[in-house]
Figure (cartoon, rainbow, N blue to C red):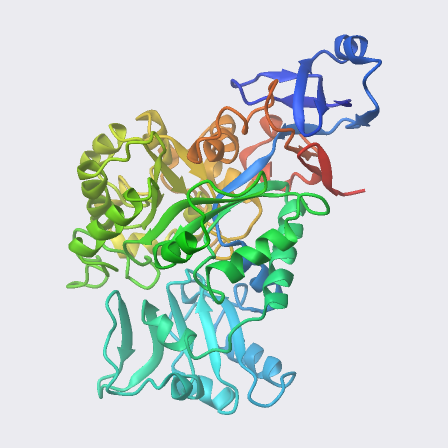
Amino acid sequence: MELWYGGKIYTMKNEGDWVEAVVTKQGTIISTGCTQDLYAAYKKSIKVEHDLKGAVMYPGFTDSHLHIIGHGERLMRLDLSFLKSAEEVLQALRQHAEQLMPGEWIIGDGWNENQWEDKRVIHRKELDQVSSEHPMMLTRVCRHALLANSKAMELAEVTKATEDPQGGVVVKDEEGQPTGYFLDQAQELIKQAMPEVTPEYLSHATELAVRDMHAFGLVGGHSEDLNYYGGFKKTLNAYDKVIDGEKIKFRAHLLVHHEVVEAMDKEGLGFKKGNDFVELGAMKVFADGALGGRTAWLSEDYADDPGNKGVAIHSTEELKNLLLKARERDMPVAVHAIGDAAAEAVIDMIEAHPLKTGERDRLIHAQILNPALIQRLQKLNIILDIQPTFVSSDFPWVIDRLGHIRLKTSYSWKTLLDAGVVCAGGSDAPIEEINPLLGIRAAVDRRSSYDNESYQTEERLSVYEAIALYTTGSAYAIGKEDSQGIISEGYKADFTVLDRDLFQLKPYELAEATVTMTIVDGEIMYQRF
């Protein structure tokens, strides 16, 4: 047995509930309580004592929605997320091109024109001036759009005659020529022309990501990667190789994209199959795009783009068939739905075809709702995967997209929780930063990273509610509320240890806390000192 003591230990059973010490054995919590009482009760069995030295322990933080391998790739690739102008991006590309072998792809992540003073999208001709030799793919921060140069388009066989695919847009100029800007499903035209990644690449990206997540206090994450890196089996193998349950422990819950469900069947696998550290989750479906590229599917036109309601990735009939595909396998669905029209379409389908196993469907993002949709959500066995940092990264520019009236029921986390709709917290990394403390701060403070103003302050969460998104909320999302998310007897010994008490900090100080230890299955996976 092992004793953890010497600091305040918040159980998250109820607000303010804490204990002095925890006893664990083989990855499970045996008992909690007063240090002296536990030491007396288990003195003969305790083999290791961990002194927290005044640090504060919480149930292990779990990111309810991210792309783990994508986060690893971000750590490997050219990071464009902090650049402040198109000119800075182009200069970074020039410098990067000088380091590459002839013909090697230039791959960049995270550009965001909304944080530039001149909010324009870079044209392929500008990219061609950087390099006509290296094919180029630059993914926008939302991952629902990318830029490509002419060399990449040549390899992808994209021409003036290329038509928009279902659920995507090949942006063209007044003469009908592609500008190099590809939205949503149109991105696949470029991606399919890229070289296939190797197993070694996948393993490296996965390990980089998991190690980084440990350093930010994350004990687990719900990810969606299985359709993008050479197929279901190849990608799953990378997870199984890296997260071996010995050298590396991390609780990876993997959503299964609808296009690889048959590949899952072929391997004899299904929902919740796997082990304690790598298991399969709900079937992932995209119902719409994103607000940044104006492809989120809205019930009314974009305020700054009349005539445009966004993009429905699937027709109503296709969406229904995808839901039935999941139901045939007793799988819940996890549907990306940012706009209110997308949310309504998904809710319609779930109401018509409820899951009979008791498992929970998931609505991912759910940024734009309305009172009628919230009332319907109250009656469904459904989880909302929300990303609190979207408040800090989307305001104030999102006001122009939606208008003030529609914003009243957008990003409305407090309204949802008060209505009894269970929410789980995630980062959507690599779209946003992986640090869960940034999400907790954004949920509590709702302050924009652009102008430092707080927006919709009536929707602020308490610190307890914000932490719960990443603990009890993430556990509830995957039906593990009886074994994860709180510190209590019989629960997994997964802990996040910080150098300070989040409940004693001012809202703007929440992200200043530092992770001192991350414990998974009773073993220290990260220690600062």
